[in-house]
Length: 353
Image (tube, rainbow, N blue to C red; front, top):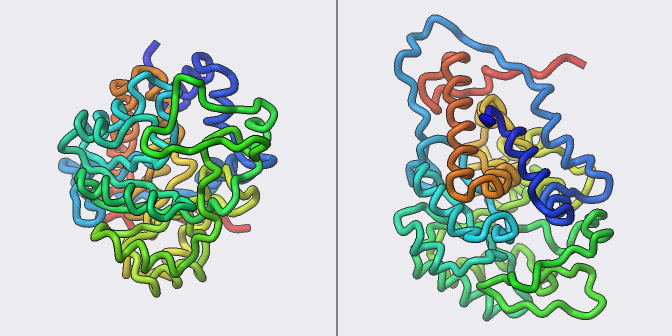
């Protein structure tokens, strides 16, 4: 059967992954209100197409942090890719390299960073960072990936505590004994809140740590998880190079806004001084267009990458990305945008209440 939309990959993954693994990937916090609204919020936004513009040549390329990518969709950080495919993050990295987009590797990768780089030596890679309680471990991790050629540091800011993920709690979800986080050694404490290796994330991480991170790396620093004007302004004040508007896929604090709803507030606060990105809820090429129209530089995919990985490893991820690229290309043509720079807020409208 031909897969014609991202939902087809989702259905395949649901049918082929063990139930606890599927529920770990798809689950959200508490009642999953934010997880679901991340998707449904796009359906409320209407497009305002322009016609008779000579759409014979359309260019989907853009840049992030000075690096060119083939279209404004990149692979966001998700953990434990070996749950979905034996080669895990190595397959994901190869797909990103083939598509000429960025892959943000998770701190909780189930492949060694050096092996990921060896599989995709010319790929554009950023590192997602959870600051560890032992700061020397964090420093060593950052220095390792910088030496390996990673180009940016993506600091996740919304994990001072783990979200209340009911399905994982019911399933007592843990990694198989044959699988581990390769780049960190994390012991799971007896009676720990989670059976996953997350207990060493430092809850004391705060704004002053941005200066500490800057003192140990030359990589640009991007903050992942910013949702408000106030924190966007603080990010500017602390001289970061980018913001990734994210609510952790609805997995942390339920009933925070959908990311597409939070985007405008952050973009208005930033006023073009740094790049703003978005993740969460992207399921079609028109979703990508709407996010860019509202001020995102590019979007990052999470769960759909894992669906593609489950389907056919590297090839499955490439299929997901190619499908989204074709949809985005067609949405540009049908709205009269010949280049990414022509995508503006004039393209979208919200229904009157």
